[in-house]
Length: 78
Image (cartoon, rainbow, N blue to C red; front, side, top):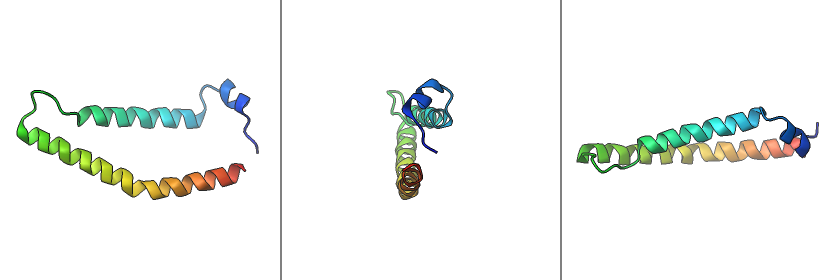
């Protein structure tokens, strides 16, 4: 089944767009949570730095699976 660009533009509630928007919202909320602020104590800064590191490692671990998933998805469409 081929997906045409005009089909995607007409369907505003497309599942992939919903998923991408949801992931973007989750990333922004995580980034806002671990943002360094003026009144943060030293312990809070260390915790936020550790959380940023954990988030980076999490994305690094997931990246090969995402790349393989994208390759399979593009192969299925082509």
